[in-house]
Length: 218
Image (cartoon, rainbow, N blue to C red; front, side, top):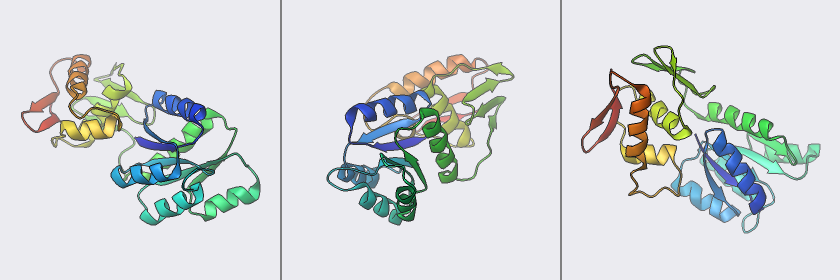
């Protein structure tokens, strides 16, 4: 679940980014409106958490352009929580609106709700080869045994199960599970797949397809 956070107050941006990452989101950050638009040209975000009062390009203008593209859900943040401001934000095309200050649990719940709306329809619980993965609860089991996975391991397993036996390249996993700061030459995917294999146990479920990537077997 890849999220773009657009917030010009760096301490607040760092706080929100860290909190969203703890809840399993992959988060990129933009500190002004133009940077946000530039990042959205490159990366298809499922949700954009957008501060309204932004430098360079105002949040209203950013929202309009994102709505025109129709590729991301927009959660607009603002220091004003007046009814007319909430209505104004929604009239711009934002999918949701949250006034500052806000309870972080509410922000997480709203982002989760928008992710569900932006994602293609899929079973709420994924299953393959004795593995059961519940994205909403962030839980995974194999043959009834709880798997204690890191957020990256969970993300890789989710992508592999969702692929339905198709090969998923390391580049795709790096793009979908990590973030924009990931080194394209890193061995993070290989290491994460290795630890995931050990946690899944025997018989092995993840197959390496030489020169192509990985797929779920079993």
